[in-house]
Length: 82
Image 1 (cartoon, one colour):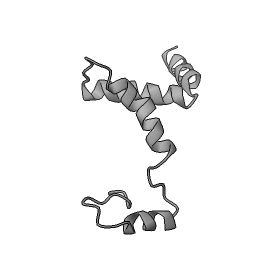
Image 2 (tube, rainbow, N blue to C red):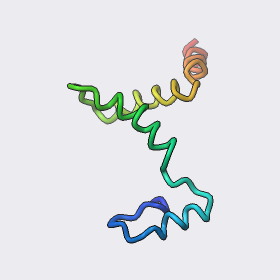
Image 3 (cartoon, one colour):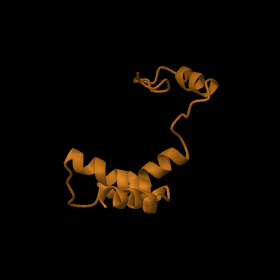
């Protein structure tokens, strides 16, 4: 199901208003800012290219680090291996 607030061709703000009334996020502020910092900064390094699977794994690690979940992730991985 597509997001309620996404609508091509900008047919007005009705979908944004509906999303706000439903208490849904509209993709502004912190969400867009963190997208630039966490995701785009790494993917858009000059000369870099990515396979989709590798990019997804790398981005998952970036999100873990940004959300202070780095130690928990590696702790679980270590327990699983041993």
